Length: 392
Image 1 (cartoon, helix red, strand yellow):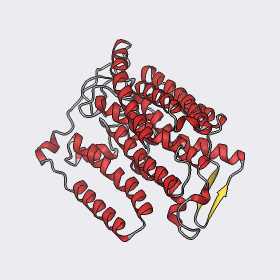
Image 2 (cartoon, helix red, strand yellow):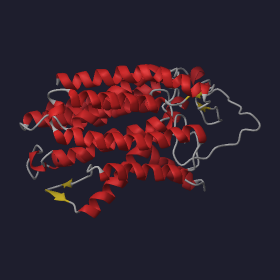
Image 3 (cartoon, rainbow, N blue to C red):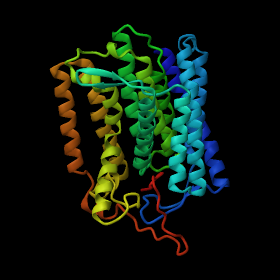
Image 4 (cartoon, rainbow, N blue to C red):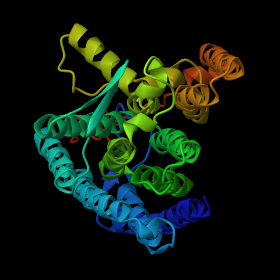
């Protein structure tokens, strides 16, 4: 545990320090998030936060492989290298999009390329837990499921990146819950506690915490597509590597206990619950209005929370709470396996529902929650497949 804690702290510190340098680079190269009618920010904000996060991740992985506990496991070193190469590919694609606004198909192609790099490196889904049985998959099915799963996670995080500190905080909470599950499971089942899943998740928490020092409201810089897509990839990679290094027979519970068997798949979905709900609701809303589903608007969950009267920070903290209830609550119920854990999660859920429906801000504050932003006359409206900060 001490080595994992050291990796987390180093990832946070390096990311925080690099973010300042990349912010300067973004300003000098004019890689800025301009203000559009659907945006929350009211002045241009520098991008390239994702490049700082990649740097923090690389240093954290390098450190981990030098340590006596994590570094002596060849499989961890192999998978970490594959994940880092895939992260480099998707981060570069995202950074180019932040600077040059790449077409949607190019970004999607970059996501598939990054998934392909991970698959070629041997990081792919090997089994799927289902009620009563855990199924192994053949090579072709494994590759297809892995690529699709990565694309879904990448776009889900990219989709929710719309308020200062939102994406980084949500991913930090979800990754922390996954780390707790994988580490406690290995401890209780007397398995090797040095796994790629644990390393990825703890490093992800670190880079998110480090970046929040620059991104929490009011943000000094945005992670952009380079950061959002990197975080989505890391969440997917932690789940995928987990299926390759944990013996499915070691999962808690018997064959009749559905939840423990499904948890490796349900947990990342629980962490991504808000982005996925937002994605589906946007598709339904835009289709009903006769629009393409990728046409950006200002009706996302975080936009609606602010419009209902929640402050910017209040809306972000509220979405943190929803993520914690879904991800941490799921882990708590599964690992504790008693009535008290169920009651505790139920009370937390009720509290979050109350705060969601009864914003603390006054109606006057609600009326001023969205300042009018008038774009320059020669600035065209942008339409994107996936959003960065304040996109979609």
